[in-house]
Image (cartoon, rainbow over all chains, first blue to last red; front, side, top):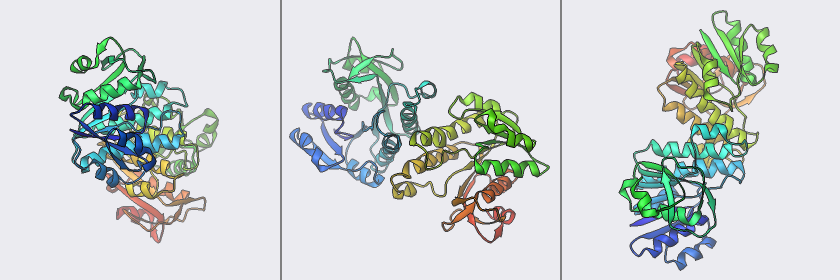
Length: 216
Length: 216
């Protein structure tokens, strides 16, 4: 099973490609912005595709040709300029969704943020609200497709080492989670039919990732 | 027939409320951000409603109660901060659409920008692209409702006096158009059943607005 990782050069993306390549049974194709980012992925034996997310849908679709799943984990993050928020977190996500349709890739895993509901938009601090709006519409666009989607809503991301243990459900109490564990959760979703059509929040917790995903 | 004008204090909005109030047969309700903006509209005999477009959908819905049509002409414009672009041009528009549903107002006229197509996003200069993206998704959200919508795509806006003459069609050659004429076109749409479910570009031209709208 081959997975296109969009935003592979982000921290979650790097962990994810490593999990996939080390699995022995899956392979990753890392979609990156520039050739200079390729080294890490080539060392892991992963394919790479250099595509600008602000470019044409057709270029993303070409990168997606022949893969079995797409993970969207690109993101400007909440602290970049708001122009990038709208061009990457919203429009880049939607273009990737449209590219999935063109390339006939049914399985799509979206890395969203913890809470992208209307309520979350309205209660967000002014500087953070545009980011929540962008993620809100990207998630909503995906829900309205007939793709086999999973939307992952991670808590506050940390760079701590992963523990392999999480709490995951439609709603969990706000908390933090290592990026490595988020990547591990995404990796678990790729091969898990039970997460199709679902979305869930995830933070650090007491349950093994495999077990947590079975209960979603 | 009563129309809620969202973004009434903008230049198009002000012209529009004047056209409506001067018609004799229609009335306007001006949705404005602050009480200080009310004077102009009160002098025209129009109702006002003070609502923050970055606030709750329910507040917009309350302002929309009992009106027959809603015009969305609020807009940060392409030159404000990109946080406002996403909060007003995209999210403010979508919230107004949702408010229309809640208030059971079927008729909805969206003032968009000249070209909000995918192609327009891809070919826009970097500083302008986020604005096109915001308008693109707002238009798309409206198309996917069952509201009786009209989407007006005006050319480059000027402050010249209106001439009452335009060119309007699904696609017209790029050109300019006075804001006063755009307001006049919107006013024409309010009472025109033939523009329901349609969208068109409009620039200055040789045809009277009434005739131009009949051909849409």
